[in-house]
Amino acid sequence: MKDGAGHFYGHADVSCKISEKILERLRFSNKIKDEVLFLIENHGIVINDDIRSIRRGVARYGAERFLKLIKVHYYDTCGKSPAYFGEKALFDSIEKHTREFLQNEPPMSLKQLKVNGSDISRLGFTGKEIGKALNFLLEQVVNGNCENDKDSLLALIENNYL
Image 1 (tube, helix red, strand yellow):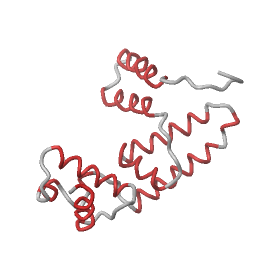
Image 2 (cartoon, helix red, strand yellow):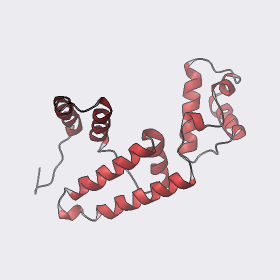
Image 3 (spheres, helix red, strand yellow):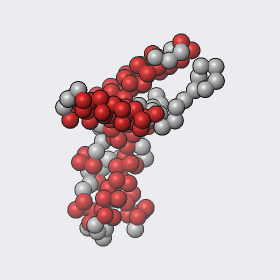
Image 4 (cartoon, helix red, strand yellow):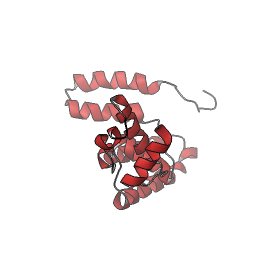
């Protein structure tokens, strides 16, 4: 640590272990424990104020949890040196854009893809290949590289996997 600034790498793991013991001792429900430990474990993720980062965050963590992570970042910034207070506006902006995204575009999950495992198996995929192909397609839709329509998705998988 230099000039009062530094970082304790791996502190999320240590903090999770300590917090889990405290939450158990205080007899919190498993639901609350899981949520608190999730936020502690993931509080260090990088969140950028762009649609791609927001899409990825919503797809990976779910809308509710992603919004909570943004709040954790905001309050984490509040606990830092005043030199970091300018970042609070950044997290306000990320939250605003995430809420706009959620109103205009539904969060993406495998269930929301316009293709399913049966469609992929008709192309000759079997077993775990089907799941990998579906996850690949979801990633492409989330990143804005492909529209979520059946023809586009099937064409993409045929061109990239077969």
